[in-house]
Image 1: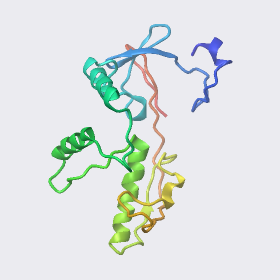
Image 2: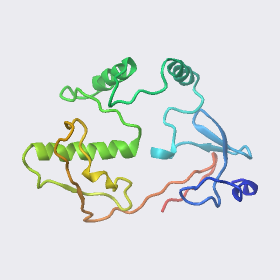
Image 3: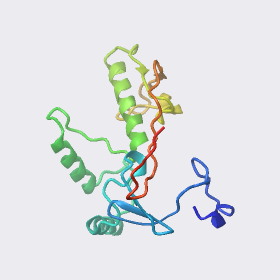
Image 4: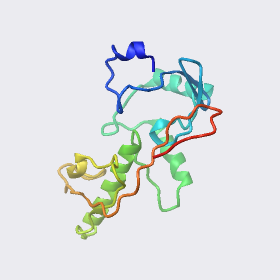
Length: 187
């Protein structure tokens, strides 16, 4: 991190600013810091761009979409691009899975999957099936547990989830490793 800027930064970083690498640009599968060092963006999950960086075809598609429409909330609108994306996703799924519920990221996907599973058991008249097993410090443990499940009618039955942690799996953290480095650490 550029220490001269850290004292004046207005960003509240997730894990503190000390030692944070300042990303300057990215291309393909690499991120480059302000000193020109190259990092393989392969950490998976929320830390990686799975499609790569600065891919011309993706930039062109995003730009074209931005000229048509930047946002239409799914609670009020459907779009042609959404329908095409859902049809494509459904074509890869088993025949009995014919619908797609779009979310903005991993934590919302986990939340939605848990809420759908819970709603299934409530609708199946088995409300006693409510336990969710999660790993230590799971990002899914949020106060959304009393919100309605996707597809529930307005004013419909609300579900309540209970997180039961029987055994916690160990925490595993992968960090950024400069390209060419032969060692990496995980805790």
